[in-house]
Structure formats: C-alpha cells, structure tokens
Length: 94
Image (tube, rainbow, N blue to C red):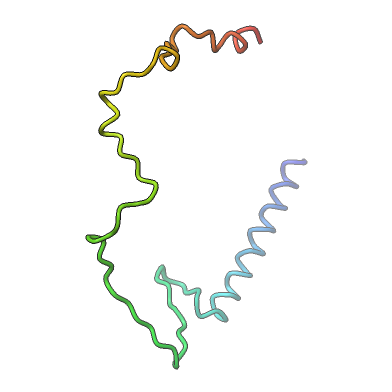
C-alpha cells in the first residue's frame, strides 16, 4: 500500500513538472521545443569575436622544468623505500 502511495506522489510531481515546462516553453525565449538554443540579443549592443592566437604566449610563471631532475642523485635522508613501510597495518586490524 505504501509503495502505491509513493508512486502516486512521484507521478504527481512528474505531472506538475511537465505542466511547468509547458508554461515555460511558451513564455521564455530561451527554452524551445527543439534541441537548439535561441539567444535574445540587445539591438544596441555590439558583439565582437576574434580568433585567439596561442603561439606567442609567455612561459608560465609556475612552470616546472622537470627534465633536468631525472639525473639528480638524492641524499640518503630523502631516499625512501615505500614498499617496506607498514602503511596498511591500521586498516587490517579493523
């Protein structure tokens, strides 16, 4: 019995949503029945566009040059074998 009540509530919400969508499709110029979007523009506005050229951009300030780091030897204090760490011991006890 409770399942039918939930289904009727959902059906009512879906029906209400359909009615709202029907009202919006007639009154709103941005919503249309097909999949294309129509835009409303201001008649006195000037709309411009141009192609962007990405060829002559400066080097990013936070760019890392990691190519020269491959041959660097690290000190023994920075070397760490993660396979020998007992990281998952807390998870296995739960």
